[in-house]
Image (cartoon, rainbow, N blue to C red; front, side, top):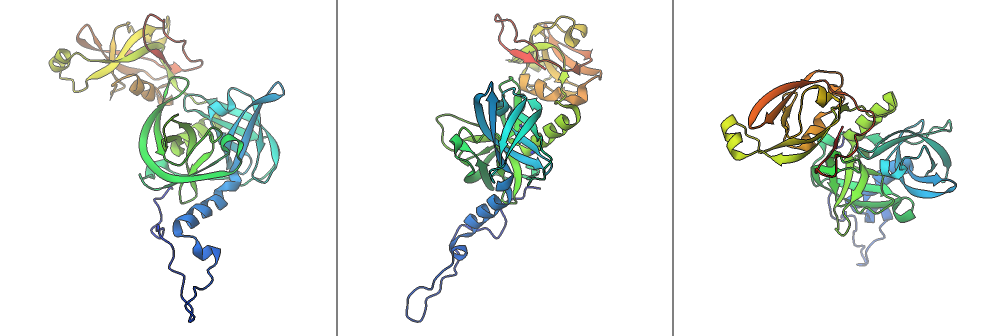
Length: 355
């Protein structure tokens, strides 16, 4: 959609004071290593360590080029993380390493909700693998290095900082990707699926998106999210999420109702459509109801509801607190495992299907 440490204390943004004047007054010769400042050395060291694990991914459709992107090897036996939008529903891909070795890879699983996919290289090989760091330990301002194949220029490196943490980004499936890392390390089409790396040489994110027309606003799915998705796909072939069978949208709670009921939240998730015979229908939920809590956790809108419908809720009976005609009620619902995403709600209502 994933331990990174902040910039090492010995990294400074100044040239080393290694140049001394000779007796004749002429500066002494300085080696390349001495001329590089600490920031450059930090970036170069990371690229030397992680670069060999970064690959180019080419998608073929009916013998024709179906697009390309980047990926990162996360296991020596050939597991490769990339973006879902790089794979685009394909079952296989061609993988090209920095050394020029080419392999065929199978798509083990594709998770559009977090824009991540996991591939496995078919050949029995041992490959250089990058380590997924702990994105919860990231700090704004620490070094962030992007490695990938932008616009077909293989093994390109850009560097910047972690600009912000905890961003939310809407995936193509409509779900919100939570805990997204924002960086100013330059990204371009083709960087998608490549790693965002810390100064400790650990992958802290999988590069996923840019804002067209903006400069220095780029996003990566956090490594902790990627780690979760990797584990789910490796175990189940997919990412398991709970399903309740309704469509909705974020809506304000009337102030007079909030005051009368003692509610501190100002918005909730209004139900706009309900799938017949689904969990929400069986629970007695109605269109027009506003969900304000799920399993005891507040719901301030559709994004909260999507985030809370995780695998832990599958096949459990959980509480749903709703507002119905200005009265607060509690019903009980049994989410099931989501198979296929719900179709979009009727064009007569605004909103999107919920898993």
